[in-house]
Structures are given as C-alpha cells and as structure tokens.
Image 1 (cartoon, rainbow, N blue to C red):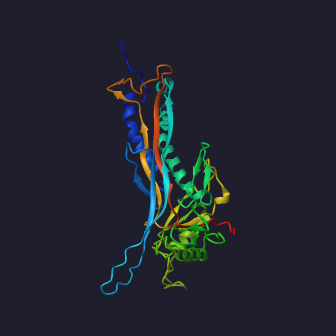
Image 2: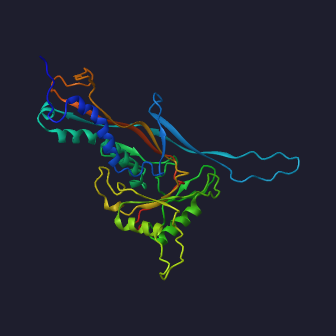
Image 3: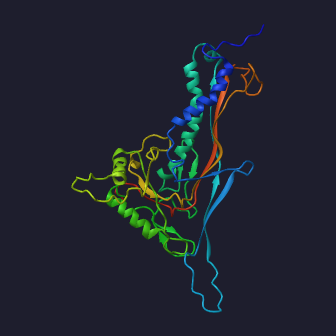
Length: 345
C-alpha cells in the first residue's frame, strides 16, 4: 500500500493550500513606501504587448489669444515634449524544500522560507523605484546584479539637474535646489520659490503645478523636522496662539527608507538627507506592472502531486517560486524639486 509522507504538524496538501493565505498575511506587513505614494503613476502592462513601451509628454499654449471681428481664430499651439522608452524587468527567487525538511519537523523554517519569496520581489521593486531618487543626480547606475540602469530622462539629463532644456524655448529650468540645504522652514520656502520660478511649459511659460508631497529619507532629524513643519500647532493659551501653520494640510509626508542606500541596499550616509517636493497630479514617473509579486506553489491534485511542478525526480525537493515583472520609467522632471541636503553648491 502506498502512503503519503507524514509532515508532522500539517499534511502536505494543507501546506500548499495555506501558502496563498500566509503570503497575503505577510504582504500586509511589508513596508511599502513609494508605491502608492503618488510619486509614481501606476499602469498595467498588458499581456502580449512586447517588452518596451514609450511614454511621452506634450504641452499646449495656456492662454487664448485675441480674435478681431471677422478674423480667423488662432490655432492652438501643441508641442510634443520629450519621450522615454520603458523596458520590462523580471525578478525571481526560488525556495526548494527538501524531503527531509518536509518530513522531520522543520515546519517553522519551511513556512518562513516560503512566505519570504513575494516579499523579496516587492522589496526589490521598492528598492528599484526609490533608487531613481537615490541616483537622482546621475544618468545611470549599476545595480546589485551588475546591470547598468538608465536613469536619464527624455531630455537626457538626470532627474535632478540645474539646466533641463525645453522643446520650444531656449530657456532652461532647474529642479535641484541651489546650495542643497537640509530640510528646514527656510529651505522649504526656498524650494517652493524655486518651484514657482522654474516650473515651465515647453514654450517657456510659467506653469502652475500643485506640489502636494513632501518626501524625505528616514533620517530621524529630517523626519521630525517634516512633522514639525506639517503638524505643529500652538495651544490657545500658548504665547504663539492664533498663529496659523501655513503647511498644515498642504503636503503629504512620504518617508523613503531605501533612498539612503547603495546599489545593494546597504546604508549610504552620503544620501542620508535627501528631500524634496513632488506633484502627484503631474508626475511623469511610471510604474507598469506585468506581473504582481507572486508566489507560485507546487500543484496538488487531491493528495497526490501532479507531474507539473512536483517533486524533483533527482533530489525529491519541492520548489516554491517568487516572481514579479515590471518597468520603471521617468519622462521629465517638472513635477519634482529636490535637495541633496549636504550643503554642496
């Protein structure tokens, strides 16, 4: 008589069925910061649509012109801006569980190995997205896999620069704050002033953009300063009662704990004080998802393993697979202003 292996605390089919539930519970604990913050605009990458996609920007004139009696109305001016090609990348990691682990009371380690897989995929995606800010003054960097990542914009400049060109004007604009000061009330006013003076359409006309995000690293001093700026208030009986906090409700604070890291995710103190403001309405940073962070588990029919994705015939291992596929692309930088916070020129 053929009998199924005894897994001690659970039967094998139960582990497989529980895997999805465990993964969902673990995903709820994952520290997702930049995805869903408004800094990136999220899209779906449709199946069978290739591995590249082009994103473009365009402007039209902001103000109507005079029309004399009987005269033709002036045609609208439409200027195609810069474009950028996005390319898909797929992330993956496997956990192979041995026969011995499945049969010798290693349940806790077994479950921990399985549940980490999609979390690692989602974590890598967060790191990739935040590294667009980490390397905001560079046009490329080498990631932990030794791959060169193109971080240039459609204008061939870095995300944060002092001389971004315009398509239909000889003017340029800057979105890297002069002097790169640490976050403070004075620095906030300086970056807001820069945004007012340097947010232009491609014709060189001032463009009004609602900046609604204040982002910082996880440096406690900067986090506390951001909270003071956005949340401070005085008691009625306090010396400064009646003073209005002009920042209250103006910005959402987004803490990006992976910005101050190197390509491998190790701490990088040189970037500890990066901060800036961004507009969720006008962002041209795109995240396109082809495959959400997913756990692919061994298939079971009743209590018998199916041939597909079952035990490896040579090792008796079972393999759980974490997979995810996405693209990250930033077209322009008129939606973000930033400071390196190091006092450099």
